[in-house]
Length: 298
Image 1 (cartoon, rainbow, N blue to C red):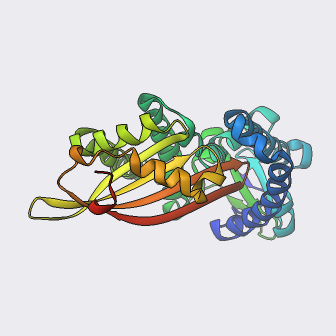
Image 2: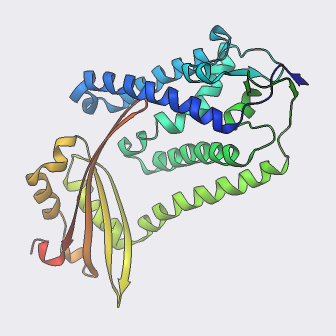
Image 3: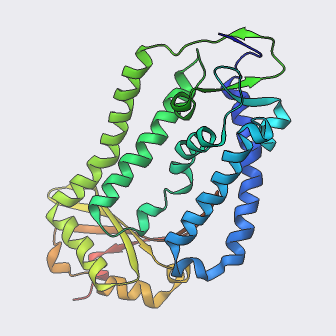
C-alpha cells in the first residue's frame, strides 16, 4: 500500500520521544514531590497511578483525537498512523502505548514484590518487552516498526518526506528476535537461579531479609574466588530513603549477619538502596561500603 508520507527513521523518533520524556519527567517529578512520603506507604498504588497518567498521555496523543502526534512528534513533524493511512482509534493507541510503557513505568514493581514466583514473571515480562523493542529499534531497518507498532499494525510517518510504499519487516527478524530475547532472559534469570542454588548466598539473604522488616528486596552474587574463599556483593533495598543514611540501620544490618553461616566469605560489598518511581521519574538513594570478617559480630 502507498503511504501518504514515508516512514520516519528511528533517529527522529528517538528525539521526539526524548522531548516527550523531558516534559514527562518534569511532570512526574512535580507529582512525586507533592506525594512525598505517602509514596512509601502505598508504593503499588502510586507506581500504578504514575503508569496510568503516562499511558493517558501517549494513548490519547497518539490516537486520532490529536491526529497521532505527541508534543515531541509534533515538533519533529511525525505522526502515528495505521498501515492503511488512517489515524489510530483509542483502543489500539492504548494497546500500543501499554506495550511500550510497561517496562519503563512499572519496572520498579519488581523490588516491592515479596513472592519469588511473581518476581520471575515480572523479569520475563519487563525484560521480554524491553529487549524486543531494543532489537527492533536497532535492526528493523525496513519497516522501522518496534514491537508496539507491529502488534497494532501502526507506523510513524515523517510529514517532511514524500509519499512512499509500505515496507514489510524482514521475516527472519522474528527468528533473531526470539533468539535475542531468550538470551536476554537467560542473562537476567540465571543470576537469580545461581543465587537461590547457592546455600551460602541463600542463607545470607534469609538472614538479612527476615531480621530486618524494612528490607523489601535483597540480591547477592559471588565475586572473585581465591582458594575456596570468595567475596560477595550484597545489595539490599529499604522501604524508605532515610534508612540509606541511617547509621543505626546499618549497624542492625551488620548485626543480622551470622558469620557462622558464611565462613568462606572474605569480604562483603554492601550496598543499601531505596527506590521509588512515579511515571517517568525515578528516585534512587544508594550507599555502598565494604565489610570484612572482623566487622561481623562475634
